[in-house]
Amino acid sequence: MSLIYGFLIIDLIGTFLLLLPISSKAPGAANILTCLFTATTSVTVTGLVTVDTLEHWTLFGQAVILTLIFIGGLGFMTGAAFLIILVGQELRLQNRLIVREGLGWGQLGDITTLVRKIVVFAVAIQFIGFIVLWIYWTFVRNLWEGFEIWQTLWLAFFHGISAFNNAGIEVLPNDIVGGDSMRGFAADYFTLFVFASLIFIGGTGYILWSDVWRRKNFRMLRLESKLILIGTAGLLLTGFITFAIGEWDNPGTSGDSSIVQKIADAFFHSFSARTAGFSVIDYGQASNSTDIATEMLMFIGGVSGTTAGGIKVNTFMVILIAVIATMRGRSSTNAFNVRIRPSVVQRALVLGAVSTAIVLLFAYLAQLLQSDLPFRDVFFQVISAAATVGLDTGITSQLNGAAQILIICAMFLGRFGPLSLALLMAGRQVEQRYALPAEEVRIG
Image: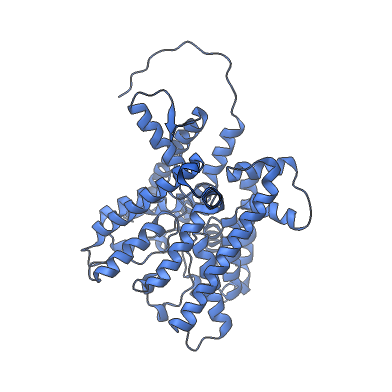
């Protein structure tokens, strides 16, 4: 529970800072619900916004938002552990246990080193992304003619962090780049590639790439790394194909674009739609087939212990393997000649079922609270919030107060609920030393 309490405190601090008159461009303090919504979407790295980030918030307010994004993407316990290490203190056993469970990996004796490497890795990748974007936008494309240097640096810095942390929040001047989110860069393939790379690295995380770097052979990788790589590749391919099919001839999105741009749109969508929430199209104009495919991709999300949301690729792959094993009549769940522990399979099934129930419940409540909006848009919005993706069909700014509070809860629960549930189940794992009488229950 310390994880939830820690992020709740950070969320409230962020809300308070955004309430200060110095944070808002409008006279006086901003609306408290707008501040709470913005702080929550930032710390949960979701990206849904009720007001335009550039137009509504001052530089100070944007800095608060970016700080919340960085903390939210890094993780409260990882960040707290790093601060403890930074001041020269040793991590206590309880903190090591919490950090290890939050990361889903690591030996207790190596947690200090692992935390340090994760933070250095995250900062280094974000810094590289910032430098590449600044050089390209400023000197190659010359986008910011007439801007002061600190403004060009800030634009690149903000988006390097937002992209790596899969936040989906942007402060791009629409009158220059042309369009909300990344729509003005739909034909800028280098920018799309940089964003997609940052999104991908942030959504897969240090632990996976550390394993790949050390072993350099697919057959030698840990089982989890193999499942992540196969699952991620399959989802990226699925996202590319479904988007291309759904939007190829859609005049409201990519239908009137060149073939190269259509392919680029589908490529970027396959990376961003699962976890980040940046978009090169108006999802309010997307086809129903694209919406359905995107909802499934958002629900699955990225990799455990990273900046990504959803039930996670790890969970999805374990469930998929368990389903295949059951259909084949096998009593154990195996992959690559390794047996997955029954407790892990059970936790994955529970997490998937609970997450599904939460999405359905929130969709029902959201439709009750906002019955004037189409259910298609409401359902998409709920999954986007609960999976902390941030894609929007254009209804976020139309939500009433009650619906905004519901979406706030969905974002917070979606970001920290699955992890907290996994930690709770792992902590309550009790070995049963006896077996009760068995009976058959009809299925199907």
